[in-house]
Length: 342
Image (cartoon, rainbow, N blue to C red):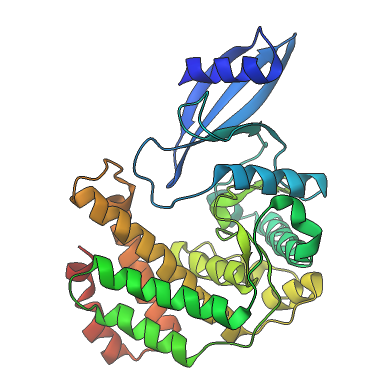
């Protein structure tokens, strides 16, 4: 891979590129990520390589679209890395991929929640919501350079997501799953009011925020980006805060949803965010289970989905609790989840 990368960089930037400290980074569920330094014409720069996996991967993504979106946002002054070179076909890298500049700081949430870091946590938490508000304040017409399609109708968009997810679960699970079935029934009863379409990051959560002692540096991992309902980002952030215990919502100055509304100009309610918490959680659960089924059937060797089974079970319980399910009813459904998921 290192030799392929060197050839790609020389084709893009000219001969004489030296690649140093080329190392894979952990945590990617859909694409491979590598860090490296490149020396060229006497200058040295730290970079990140994002490349499609050779096989497996929990989600299917379009790296060329991700490249365009990051580039478009970077030119607008939004806190994202600067993208450099794209191999859209995999001609050089073997699979599609791109190179971008590496941001400083860390994405680990633990330091934010240590004793004595309350002010930093409040600042970073607030800046995370401010950035999301800024993103969702942008009209789709202003982001035409992304090349992403904008859905025509909100009702059709939401119904299609629910219907396609439900069909997907029915296809990969041989028997009905009461917990999942209850979530689909709940969603159909609780569809919120429509909202304008906006650019949705779709994995807006702590692992994708780079920060240091000065505050938020940038937002990474735009592989799932699309135009959709802006509450998709709020709902996913909410379930991830609950799932992993690093909850930035109470730390946001002026209030989580209040601050978001102020920055985005979009009025959101807790009920609307909860709907998309359930929807996005189901979408990711489906992707994990589909990938696990492929691993079990010998279609690929990616072990990330089996590794994620415990968070999937915990997330399912949290989702049902968020829907207001009683303790007795939850106990009856929860007793079935481990065997069904396995």
